[in-house]
Image (cartoon, rainbow over all chains, first blue to last red; front, side, top):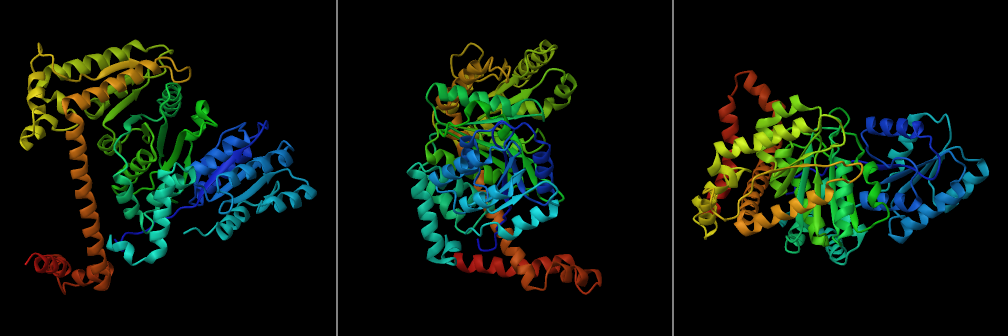
Length: 139
Length: 372
């Protein structure tokens, strides 16, 4: 039916990877995304990179937001990206990282395919606006 | 299928790719197909049409209950237990969406701790998206996709009990209703609705105090109902036995009539009341045995065919109504939009009946011309 309305929603996975147990930030982000009209899948704490990949692939998210406060981003993020590539899900997933990331590492993460890194104090509107602008146009 | 012609070859090619991918067992294709279904994207109808012939072999289980009853945790353990015996599992977990922003936090996946890293469990979170009657359609279509993908078991986890689970019942031939201890009063108030949709009642969190009371109450309700309405038992999802007779089908209805006789050996089903502890997995094996028994009953009694038949009848009606509604909406737009029409009625320039007739008449004339 040509008249049937297509109803799209931005789907996000908010993911906590590794041993870091601080999820207040991830909760705040998840709620802000919800209020922005996104559909947010929250991973829960202490996820292995493989679990994040499984969730991102099966949930077919537009955006993967990884929250890392443990400093292990250089080990964990590449593993997630590798996994996404394995399932052909890297190309059209917008990957953003939030947490405490030194500037040198930021450049490296971006080189790997992370679209943006948001540090502490980033206004929520900025993150949401970035996602709205950069969410992959999928057919 | 005319809808897709308008969108050209690109859509066709993409849908064909998705179908091929699903039949080849590609996770990504399945995930993408479900997104198509959820979004009602161009070509999604062709997608379901193509998948339909490959579906039909999965056992579909619905799990419903009040918020916090432990549905997600139990579904996780169910999936893990099915996996232990070699079955592949698909899960569709529906969470509510915000009526204000349309946004949603889909939290069921957090409980899926027993199945992480096991790609043979395909877990998909779904937002209710406040669709008018559309939740059931998207869920049913997603079940079709998981079924066609080759999952042996598909579990549907509903939003916390409300009115939606009536839809879910139509999609899942076997329905488990979860109750938690300490909700005795809830059980009382939910009696009428819940008794009609449960094939299995599960008192979850059975390691807590006060588990005896809901078990006893449910047992009593189940048996009292059976005593009061023996003849209706086999059709507890609706007018099952009556429907069969009305259709004048094969011997199945005869067997069901025999089932009314308490001494008969014919298949019949009295809802079971079980206890589980979702966090430890206690009672989950028995629950699966009960699901198996129910599936067996459905098949042997002919009730499965009858229920599936009824579900498709309902689905066809829903689709046709939605499509006709969309045609009417288009027609309203062509005539200046609903606001202008309403304003004209308010100014007494015309009346609602005349407006409705003007909108529907061209559609009705087309149908007449087609049939003439």
